[in-house]
Image 1 (cartoon, rainbow, N blue to C red):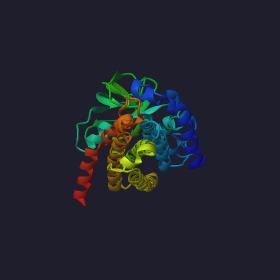
Image 2: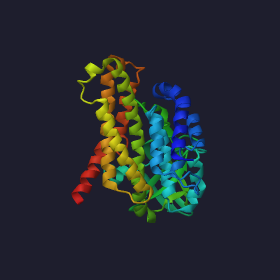
Image 3: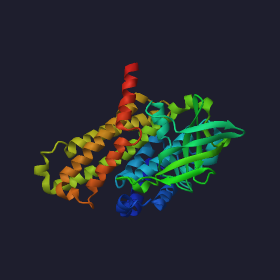
Length: 363
């Protein structure tokens, strides 16, 4: 399959199966499980793995483009698909063949739905919060205890990746809703992204066998840099799709009100030019990460810029739409809330700026 064919197939599926559900996803918290499974069947997660692994080998840049196609209609579902793609990325980069053989092909092909519980770890490694999961070595694996407040694209029949602290290192592993000792609890209602199957997790003496380990404590320090750039760059697919949606609103508003809309701060042309520039840089950095040559500082800067651009574009879309954009049924207000999520999901703008400052100070 070529990249063009894959993206055309994804766009067609989004139009036929996702677009009719967007309001229910946003306002009723509908999780589009059947869409996610169909997306997997047409290769919508497969770019993150090689052909030998069960993917299509099209690479990280193509996977980001798939997320953008989904985000053009629904930022929430693009985020759910990001969770799946991120879990596949972790396994693709794992040095442990057993865990790859056990899980990766099914995730790449969408036969199993998967999430990523790495927010706490990423913030912990940046010095922002303590690590919530703790592990101890036991015969044949690890025992894990603790709790995580928000993990997305998960459920009783889903699996996901987590990391637990053990001594002065960490162990990263696969777990799932049916594992003994794992409990899922509903979260407080969000203002958006409700249709993403987001739960808080509790771990009570959860046993993780060695064959489910993505990175052992001895491997973790060298492993985590191999996934960080891809984890972050994949999120730009969500943001780019949300921006595309905002640009569509602006274009429609300008059919009638272009003369007065010209007085707003962010025009269609300016926003489109900024998006095109960011997208070119995204593809370049994604190719580097896919080829195991990640460039961390430019990646952090690009992700921060993409979040700011999403905020500017969606607010501008609401202003271009005027009173119509303030109606609950208008996509303009939904896009504003989705862009807020792009700006606060780990790594949030403030988190990114903290890491950027630290890296620049070390140069």
